[in-house]
Image 1: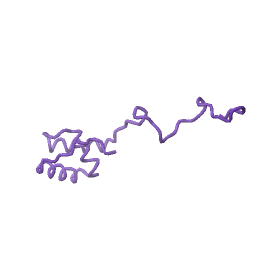
Image 2: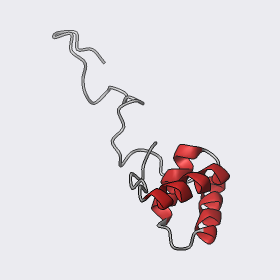
Image 3: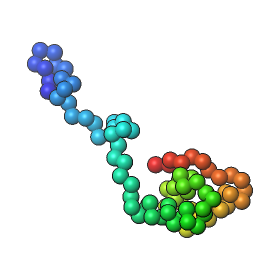
Image 4: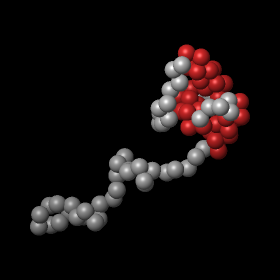
Length: 86
């Protein structure tokens, strides 16, 4: 609401921006299909860190591609540890 005297918006009446959410306000819902695919990767690669596998899956988009990329990086000693590529 704009104050008639000052022309400024009252901060209590402003709606929050959808594009300026703090990390605590972002939805934390996990896609069940994504979780199932990470479980499958973890079953196939039990020595691998689940968070790292999830990162590979996010970047690759498909579980079979993620496996290939992970195995290639493991062979070369260049496993990516940047977990979050959202």
